[in-house]
Amino acid sequence: MAIDLIKILPEYFRPVLEFKEIIKADEAVLEELENHIKQIRKNFYIQTADETTLAQKELLFDIFASPGETIEYRRQRLLQKYNTIVPFSIGFLRDQLTELFGKDFTLSVDSAACKLEVSVTSSRYGAVDLLYNLLWDVIPAHMEIHANQQVNNYSTSELCVGGVMSSAFTQTI
Image (tube, rainbow, N blue to C red; front, side, top):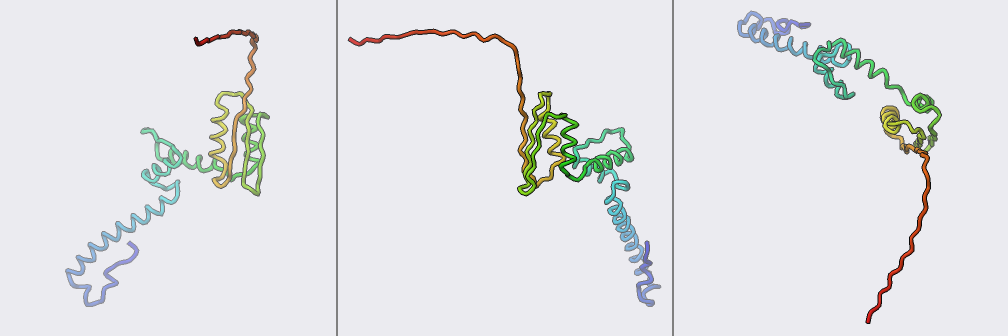
C-alpha cells in the first residue's frame, strides 16, 4: 500500500494496541480496494482486461468463446474486430459494394438529407442478405437507407393461348 496509516495517527495514539489492530484491519481492506481499482483500470483496455470483461465485450460483437480458447487469443480476436470497423465514407461503401456485387448495383447519396439509396441488380443467391449485413455494419445510425434488390429471371417456355365461350340462360315461369 502506498500510505502507511499508522503515520497518519497522532503520536499519542500510535503505541495504543487497539489502534494498531484497527489500522491493520483497515490496511487490509484498503489494499483490497487498491487491487480492485488497479483491475478496473486494466479492464479499460482489451490487452489487459480480465476474463469477465472480455466476455462482456465479446457479447457486444456477438462473439462466443469456445472452452479451449486462451485469453490471449480472445483478446486478439476482439482487437481485430475493433480494428475492422472503419469510419464511414462513400468511397469505402462503393468499394465494398463493388467487391460484393461487381457492377450490379447503383448508389445515390443525398448528403444534405443524410439519405442513401442502394439498388442491387445481382441475381446471386443471398445478395440481399449480403447487402443488408454490409449496410448494418458500415452505415452510421443517423443516415436514412433505402435498399432493395431487383432481379430479372428469364426462362424459356412456350405460350399457349386458349379460349372458351359459354352462356347460361335462366327463365322464370
